[in-house]
Image: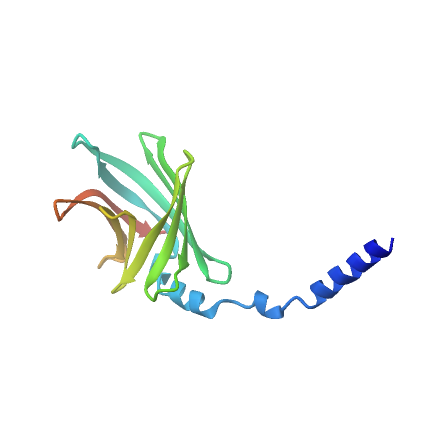
Length: 169
């Protein structure tokens, strides 16, 4: 019985001593994520992707992008359809990195695939890299639309395989 009482007292002391700082917002992370404010919102539009055989496939796309955790993370939920069939259903979380201008881009697909990728922002353009030879580039075009391209690198040259243009709802 003494052991239980002692354990309860020690637990209570550790809870009372729980540092209030652990509940404070990470201001650096918040500041870093605010640089991506241009993608926050509800988006819809269309795009195309090139198959490995060189056939262009079109799709309709929505993106729901919002800040989470007091603006220290961004949640992206995207869904693409073609011929009334879901062809893309993904979620991503963007968080800041210790290196200025760099981010972590964690992606999750409905088929169970997931990954943690390097990302960066340069001149209000967001880049994320599924691997060293593939990159996606997101920017806001002159019409205020989300304009995203996907490119792969072959023999040092970048070749486009994906394009998407979305309007803010």
